[in-house]
Image (tube, rainbow over all chains, first blue to last red; front, side, top):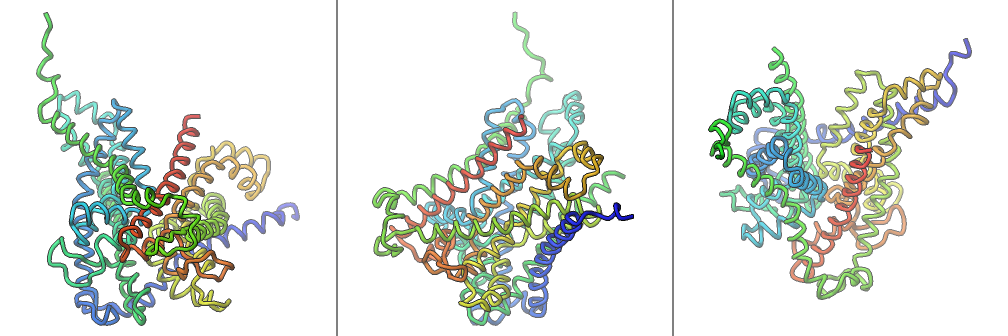
Length: 282
Length: 292
């Protein structure tokens, strides 16, 4: 039976490939595990609601959660309608206008590649200075909206393209206007994909730090309006870990909140889409 | 006599407004990248005009408040960390793709792909936190403070690994099945098929992934900022601290004014142009392969 045994090279390669995969999976579990193990102990209802004290070493993250949610709300409030309009344009109308649609698509590819720190520079120059919004939740949210757009548009466009062409032809044959076709047919059919794209966009935005450092700022006070500066959760983690000696414990607790939010977002995008597909199949 | 088109065939007024609104949205979204370039260039202009771009490589040191603008150490820091990260993440990411396509049982491959996607979604500030608290003390056992080239390279490698792994996986998946079946029919082993047939066939997709990963590495800020030590110098060894172009912007934008601020924008502009050129290259190559 000797000839059935794998050659030595094959056996070594198999071991190496499994080892590489184990290394990748192990790194991920190490990082996530580290956040959860060190951070979970610091989590409590009081931590989530109280204000930070002593530069963040003590107290909680109440105002920071509020600022983070406000920044996300501005981001999605601006990016969702703009992204939806662009995606509908690209998938439904850009067919006959090859030149313009192609230009927009290329420009979005380029936008997706801009480093986040450059978004920060841009947001600082345009929103904080030229438009006079200063370091504010509005500036940060608008900067993040620019960042989230390419992902949002790509997922929405894909969802719209997945609607079978026969349905559009059927609607056209019935004499439905484009607006009616869009509202009654295309958007409902593409809703799960659009929803998943939105969730991914939120995930991208909540993870961002560099673009917020000098657009929404560092202030830990409870924001009174969108024109106040507000510190996001990610900036809080950075500041505690880098600039506050003895801030590690609360940095980990805040990081743990961020990880749990991202895991929830990830599950929502995957399971939500699956649930919708099952419902639609029935 | 010209017959007027029937009512049903004419576009309704609401449709006209809809089309206009959608086109306006697309034009707005499409113009953002132009706006970014314009505004960053506008802020960078004073430094580029008054001092000239050459100053960034010929000045004595980086003392922006005194008008000394030597950016070279930061450029070296960015290139060294990105190159090092690519050398580590490249082979590992390709191996990860080969694992998912050729070695993992179907169920394990599905789970493994979700793990890699999850790794891709971890915020850079969390990589930084983990690097600072867990990795840096381990590296410090080799000597020094632990914050430096080695730590920065390792963290950056982990961050760009998913990009390489996901694109390699996709490129290997696009290799036509008959080619692989033919190789298997010749009695070739799994590794020989992966190494001699699949990887060469997926070459251009894998190269695309490496270029994209390089772009991510050049542009990464937070994670590197937190573990690199941030001393302005060309590192003279793997344990020496260094500062990248991105970290320099993040550290100094808070208090920079006038010429200093403008110099930081100029470095951001250079970064944007470099990464943009990489992506245009990728896109260009991809379109050419698709057409061919």
